[in-house]
Image (cartoon, rainbow, N blue to C red; front, side, top):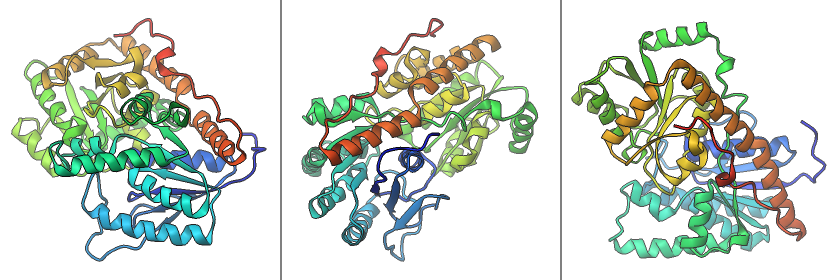
Length: 422
C-alpha cells in the first residue's frame, strides 16, 4: 500500500463497549482502526474495562468496579455507571492529549464526544450503527409505552444533531437519520460495514484442513452444514432458526446446523433439546474473530435471520466474502448487502425461514458455487475497508481544513444485478 501524503492525525476513538468482544460493533471499530492506522494516523481507543486487547491497537480502559467482570452484550443497566467512568477518563485524557478528531461510536460515545468536542474544539464524528431507542426495544430493555421512551428519544435526537458528521453502517440507517430524526442530509455519510476479503477467503483453507476441523467439532461429513456466527439472542432470529431447523428435520436428514456464538449457549442448547435437535446442532460457544474465517469455511450455506430493522448486520459480509449462499429476512440492511444475490424468507416466521433454507439446500453444487462467487465479487467491489478508510480520512481532513465534505460512496441500490438471482 502506498504511503499516505496526508498529515498524520491524532484521533480519539470513543468505544463504550468491552472492546474487543468478537462481534458486531466491535468488529467495525477494530477494522476502522486497522485501516486508519495503515493510512498513517494515530488512533487511541477509550473503552470499558475487561475487553480483549488486540495486538497493535492502542486501547486504554476506564476504571472498573469490583462487582462486574463480564462482557456486556446489548443493553444493560451496568452501562450507566460504566459510561460515567468512561466519561471521566475521556475528559482527563482529552485535556492532557488534545485530539485532532473525536470519533465516537454508539450513542453513549456520541454523548461523551459532544462534551469533549465542546471542551477541546476538536470536530466530532459520530459512528451511527442504529437507533438507540429501537435497539433498546429490540433487546426488550425498553417498551414504547414506557415513560422513559419519550425522554430517551429526545436525548437520542440531541446526540444525533450534535455531531459535525455522522457515519452510518448502512444507507438505510442514513435514511433513518434524515427521515425520522431530521438530521441534515449534508452531515450524514453512509459508510456501510465492510469486510477484509483477504482474510475471509475460503481459498485460504485446503479440503484437508476443512475435513480435520469438521472432525474436531464432530460435524457429520455427509451432511450439508448451515453456519451461523453471531450473538445468540431472540432479536438475532436464533429462536426462529432452530424452529425452522425442526421443521426441516421432519422431511430431510441431510442437514446440520453449526451455531457459533454466545452468550446464551445453555439456553439455546436447552431449546434445541426441547425441539429434538440435539443431534442436529453443534454449539461452539464464542469464536475469536481471527478464527472466524476457517470456521465459516465449514459451511455450505449461511443463515443471517436478524430481525432488527435498524441495526447493522456485518456477519452477512463475512458470509459473502467466504462465498456462502446466505439466507436472510428481507430487512433493509440485508437487502443492501446481499442485493438480489440473497435468498430471502417471504416473512419473518419460522415456516418462511424453513422454506428459504430449503431453497438454498436444494441448490446444485454448481449453482451454490456460482451464487457464492457472485456474492464474494460483490463484497470485494463494493464493501472494501480500504475504500471506507479513505472516505473516513477525507472527512477528517475536510472538517479540519474547512474544505467541502467529500461526495458519498456509491448507493447500493445502484449496484449491478445478478442474472442468476434466486
